Structure formats: structure tokens, C-alpha cells
Amino acid sequence: MARVSAQERRRQLVDAAFRVMGREGFAAATTRRVCAEAGASLAAFHYCFASKQELLVELTAQTMAGLVAARAGVHVGGSVTESLRSTLRGYWETVEQDPNRESVLMALTQHALREPALAGIAEQQYAAYHRTARETLEEIAAGCEVRWTLPVAQLARMLVVVTDGVTLAWLVDRDSDAALAALNAFADQLAGLAVAGS
Amino acid sequence: MARVSAQERRRQLVDAAFRVMGREGFAAATTRRVCAEAGASLAAFHYCFASKQELLVELTAQTMAGLVAARAGVHVGGSVTESLRSTLRGYWETVEQDPNRESVLMALTQHALREPALAGIAEQQYAAYHRTARETLEEIAAGCEVRWTLPVAQLARMLVVVTDGVTLAWLVDRDSDAALAALNAFADQLAGLAVAGS
DNA sequence: GTCTATACACGGATAGAC
DNA sequence: GTCTATCCGTGTATAGAC
Image (cartoon, rainbow over the protein chains, first blue to last red):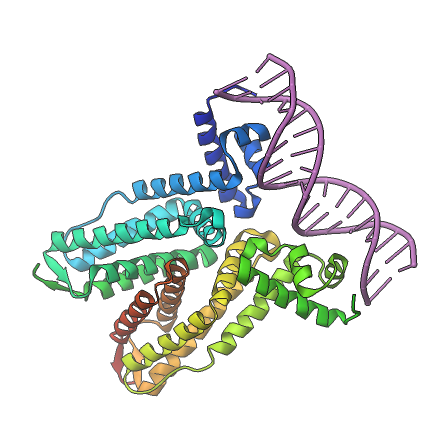
């Protein structure tokens, strides 16, 4: 077994866990399976991580970071409707381009909700989602010179609700047309909650 | 160990599995743990069920049946907005009254998506959701003497997206006010897609 | 500081005695 | 029809080699 730094090993193991979960599901990502994927020994694993839970925490953080990076740009341009539509389409492209990221994050959320050792992880994830959604809405309002007629926090939650719900349904039936149609319809609906002015 | 019929044992074990999952999460519902909860032996389990997966299939069916029963009534009365609002409030009451049912179903869906032995289970769940949503929308349209300006199938998906998304977010942060506010806002939005006439 | 080897308790599953 | 004993895989831990 090659002697690599603990830091590098951690990265390798987290990446391996993501790949295994993506291919075979959350339950398939056993410690030994992850080690095999990473080309590491079981002891190497427990030298880098105190427990499997610790790997899951790091996996969540790293996957969330990847997701935030992929969502880089808000698309502001033209009307509020067009901005919302293209922003949601941008979101959707990141989902279709890397569906595993979504399934892994869903599974991690579900797991974290019931595992005391992972307490707070799910809450942090959703706080991040809501913050991102809120910033997106504020950028669109500023860019299109409108203001929202409902509290931005509430609209942000609605945006997260919709993206989450659409993603969940798509993971089940993989109906991309239906997903995009739903996102467009919601974009139009939300646009109705903006009025000119600041 | 009491000698009970295999059929009765199955029921006991499925109920026990639901209780354990509700209390301690999906992962905690090990075969042994479920047997202890049901007061059965491990061998009794494998006499009734070929595998744990088989119990999960039955658990899904039984939980879905309970959910459909709880959602019995559509609330039609007054305007479209009022009908949608009170229908969604009715949905929400069933969630708050038995949150475990939702977490168990979410976990089962996630699990079924990746487990070949459970293939089709998640799809069936969502097909049932979509059918129920569709029927609800059609009853409201008939009762309020309006018609929908988008295909009912699309609106049904939007309804499922919203209830799913709201439920998922609530399971994480338990913010009931935010959940209800989101549902009301979506009810108002959907009402905008109805026009008088049939 | 990193890895090899080994051990233990608990998981699902099964064969076979009663 | 029910239970005992057992198998193999998984998470975790540790002693000690290099």
C-alpha cells in the first residue's frame, strides 16, 4: 500500500465514497467497499477518520461545495419571467449533468435527520439552500428593477421547495420534459409576485 | 414464543418495523430490532418473509394505504382559491399529525431507487401520488365550475412537487408556519391557472 | 506517521433439529 | 410451524511492524 499523506487519503476516500454511492446507492457505501474503491486498507481508513460518520460529514461538505460551485451564475437579463426561467434552467442543467450529486445529497440529508452523530448537518444544508435562493431572488430583483410583494425569505423557501420537489420526482421517473415544464410554470408564477420599483 | 398464524405475524412485523423506523430511523430498523419490537424470533421472521426486502415492500404498501385513507376528503367549497387552500391545509394536517409516515415513506423511496430487489416500488408510489393529485384537481374544477388552463397532468405534478418539497423542508427544520405559508402561497398561484367555464 | 494483522460485536440469511 | 446454531459481511478498535 503506497504511503500517502493522511490529507490526500481523506480526499481519496471521500471521492471513492461519492463514486460508490453514485453507482450503487447509499447503503452500498460500506467502509470496506469504499476502501477497495480508493485502493486503501481498512486501517488506513480509520487512521484518517475516527468513524464512518466522520467521512459522511466530510462527504456532505465537499458535495455541497461542488454543488454551490456548479450553480455559480444567476441569469439576469430581460424580464423577471425570463430571468427566473433561465436561472431555473441553469439549475436544472446542473442536476441533469450530475444526477448522482443530487441522489447522494438527498440520501445524506435523510440519513443525517435521524443520526445523532450527524445532528445539524441537514439543517446546515437547508440553511445553505435557503441562503442561496434568497441571494438569487435579490439579484434578480435588483437586475430587473422590481421588488417582491412577499417576504424574500418566504419566496426563497418556495424556490427551494420547488427545486427540491422537481428533483425528487425526476429521480424517480426521470421525466425531463415534465421537470422542465414544471420549473417553467413555477418561474411564471413567481414572476407574478414581482412589481416594478425597488 | 406464541404460535400465531403467519399472516398475523406478517402484520405484527410490518407494524413493528414502522414503529422502529418512526422512532429511530430507517437504518435502525434491523431485522433483529424489528423482531424484538414484535416479540418474534429471527427465524419466525424468515419464515414469514423471504428477506428483509420483502418486508420493506409490504411496509411500503401498507404505509401508502394508510396515507391514502388519511387524505380521504377533498375540500371543495367557495372559490377555487379557498378550495385549494383548504385541501392543502387538509394535506398538511395529515403530515403534522403523523410525521413518521412521511419520513418512513421518504426513506423507503430513497432506498427503493437504488435497490434492484425493490425496483418499481418508488415509481408506483409516485404514480399513486400523481393520480391522487390529478383526481383532486379535477374534483375542484368540477365543484367550482372552472377549467384548468394547463394540462391536468402537469398541474398534478406541480402539486406533488410542492407537497413533497414542503414536507421535505419541514422534516429538516420543523418550521410549521413557513410550511403553511408556502402552501397557501402555492394555492393562490395555482388558483390563477383556473378560468370560469367547464 | 503510516500501514498490517487481527479481534469483537452486530447485521442478514440459512440449514436442520424438534 | 418454530427455534437453535451457524455462516459470512460490516463497523469499530487496537497492537505492533516499518
